[in-house]
Image 1: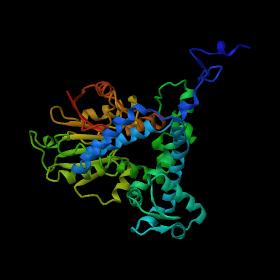
Image 2: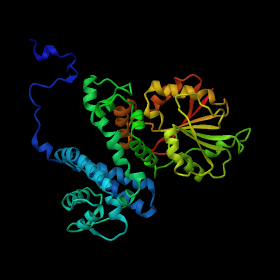
Image 3: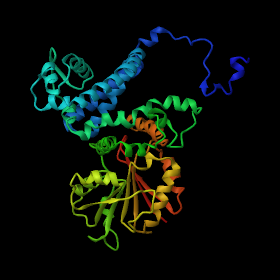
Length: 434
């Protein structure tokens, strides 16, 4: 037999990181002392500064700055032991408690009005066991989801009011049904592949976690309820954040300031893989006077679901698979929102290659609405999504360099400009053929 040192290559043994023969010494006091105490004074000053500005101006940017600083303050003040317990205990149990509440329609029972409600009342309204529900309610309170007004008595919050709508509450069964098991399988998948970057979306952590050979989107086809939940979650994903359609982000007016002008019969904007059509609903609401047709393209099942929404007649729904030739030729703009991040580079190139022949040189634009990860100070939503992409799609949230490499690897396509509003907000990557 060979010893441990002889069995390892570059510090690895069958894909496992080699462990030292003895546990590293850690001073126990480190685990129960604040994590980054030297940052605390500056963070407190920053919160105070932005807090005064927010109270004076009610500015959204100041609100996000307070949130960033408040999170940083928590991370600096909590001890490693507290952080470990938060990661291992509170996050998984909070998720379970919220999903149970969604399944019971608890938030609707609680949030119809401002009146506090007892655990017994809520158990009767939801048809649940009073003892079990009381325990769920206490955890929801401890984690800031709802308000406690007395012993076993609770009041609604903005969060619980929002959770009455499936557009928001569907996020929880969606993640359980088609996302989270893949993410939880990512450590084992990376260990088994010696930490190689995943490139095959039919052989990644998703398949391991859900014990399937199907691609993510093929699994959704077999589970229409999860597909519906996923579409609702995607429709709510970018709500409340700056949109490229807002004044001061991208010059939307230039889409019609072209020669020859866009007429009512011309196609102004094609939303490829546009899901429920919410982006074009937003576009038409913000720019109602722009002439030209607005078309949402997606797979038949998604289009069928979108038809149930009775969208504005201005918005046309069309069945289309973006892995096939684009059927709308010479539109003023083609739009891809959170499509390419679902696919590894090889698949993205196919999508773009099928689209390029439809673009008219000197006229058509390709607008890619995606995260562009900065080289420093990346936002937690984006980095979270990046790991989800790695686990469930063998894909990635891309940096600017990665976006340029991808787009420019497609014959005849180039990036004109990357438009960005602020940190943590999806950019608009403006492309054209040449």
